[in-house]
Image 1 (cartoon, rainbow, N blue to C red):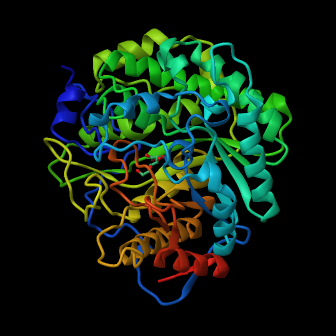
Image 2: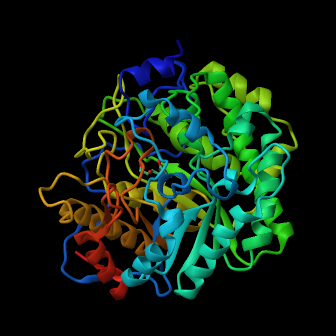
Amino acid sequence: MTRSSELAQRGIGRRQLLGGCLAASSMAAVGCTARAPGTSMHSAEASTTMPRPFPSGFAWGVATSAFQIEGSLTSDGRTASIWDTYTADKAHVADRSNATVACDHYRRWEADLDLMKQLGLGSYRFSIAWPRIVPANDRRINSAGLAFYDRLVDGLVARGITPVATLFHWDLPQYLQDAGGWENRDSAGWFADYAQAVFAKLGDRVGSWATINETKIIVQMGYQQGTMAPGQRDARVSGRVMHHLNLAHGRAVQAFRASGAVGRIGPCFAVAPCYPADASVPPEVVDGIDLQENRLYLDPLLRGGYPTKLDRLDPGFVAGLNSAVRPEDAAVIAGKVDFVGLTYYSPAIVGSTGPVQRYPVASNHWQQIFPQGLYDVLTRLHREYDDPSIVVLENGVPDDSGEDPVNDQRRIEFLRSHLVAAQQAVADGARLTGYHAWSLLDNFEWAQGYTQRYGLVRVDFDTQSRTRKASAAWYAKVIAANAVTV
Ligand code: GCO
């Protein structure tokens, strides 16, 4: 059993495989936050009743992903993805459910777009399902599958909402998995070919493209902990997979530049700012977690190469990574992007013997609510990664704790506090141009099934009726004011 699987069995949080890939040796401290949390790091927490304005033209959005909302998994030629396969085993899903119907968005998309317009949204991040576009090994482009997204994009544009399309949000076609999936170096080429077909069809209208959603989560949960598709536990394989996902990102950026599409393209990182639980935690331990959670993913894309000192990582992971890297890859992976997309949910609080829960924990049990973490990652990118244009592609929380399911006051408080932190980061120099709340609708939360409701809009999964929650009305006011009020 690998160390990461042992940790998984002990129930380490959703995004925090703290120590899961770490070896015992030391590592030079670079760039991570070496202070204990709890100290006020900035004026982000200062209270005032003044509205805090965002820059004009700020993109207010929501985010979703194909597998989590679409349903209609066999319509118009779609074939199975690795998530269809993974969820076919009911033991993999908390409530033994599946995404066969999900939010039935594939058929109800027009009404959902109307809802977005009513909220005043200016941006909608959705993902394109690869198995709808290239359903089989013959690599034929399925025009019926592309037509769905063509209609969706037209519908968004007609409503004045900018389409933000993610090319890959975890639903790898099963036939590609059967050919080795991301472990196979050819996957980068498969992805570039698929991306090229999508750019050719939608590239004249999509405002921004995100390449691969959260490589880190695929690597950690799909290939180390085995708690997401494809459910593997193999450190060596996970190292190869990480590199090939990075290469696929780079190849898609190249295809985008060659396509003449009009929009912007960038990655989507799942960031987790790291803090020592207390003063006794050695800085090099926090640094090792920061390497594993952040720099391992940010640096090859944004700084031209992997961090050089990897000796705190699992040797199997490093061996897998080294077996995959070729000298010519670095330049491809580091091709210029137009923005840096990030998702922020939770910090990593590093204790001497493992992860620590320091802040209020959401009902998903893995997410510690710490808005200043968002401030810290935004300003860190500004300072340490050459001041990129940044878009928050996801930020949200499940809130099903109240007696009244549409009176989601905890979500409002979550969004408010995170937007205050984001606004403060902008005031302090971070070039943040947009924010997408996760999510528009309650949806299929991967291995948690329908047990966690992240939506601004409630979905009754028996009737598919949609009801706006208090947070939707609150967010609409923020959007109208282009400001958040403390
Ligand atoms: C992720 C995914 C989303 C999740 C959301 C809540 O970050 O895991 O992008 O698909 O549903 O983050 O966990």
